[in-house]
Length: 297
Image (cartoon, rainbow, N blue to C red):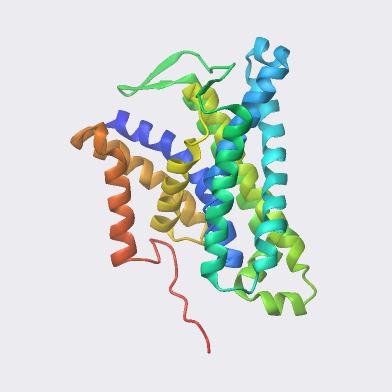
């Protein structure tokens, strides 16, 4: 039983990192950014390119080299998110949501098949694989790489929470989420804050991509599709637009998958996850921590 909890928490931390980007963007501009999962894929390939070109990093194979690559990939994917927002989404601000949604799907395909054209259709093997001792915790097996990646994911989520709740930029984000027009009248630079939101959300997705590549070992240009849908599911379960909800939803989805596949079999993993998504959308669309919003006329 404890082994299922450990496995669920580990996978759930990946889902939570990507789901945070979904929730941040939706919370501020009410956009379901379906290209977000592909930013995760771009982050994984950015890490792959860095390890392949800087042979010293791959040769050292240590934690510091991984953290350095993680940081560079986060900056790259963050800037990519800002670019996408500026080119694809900002001109459509104020347009019907369907137009923006279709644009997000288009951006997703551009990223997927742009990477395919550059890197090729075949899976790539990461130059660095995390390895280490295996510990026994009350009968559950947990490896050193799992502990490291879980600690990195938790650290990033704590840093994000501090940024949003305690910083000036965080107050601006929350003000825009409540009322963008009022925030603008109070002197908040709405465009700049939205760009920073895309930067932070995309950087977190890029970090998750590098960690997935270093842990699982192989990456491909379609790896962002399923993780994007899982992160969206996690955001819906927790309450899309709510940061704590995204973290809670990611962890819960990881635990649900872990226990579900143990009882039903691994082939039911995705079916189990998306069945949860349908159930939540049908019976509690606001998620666990989400609040029902009444649109004023």
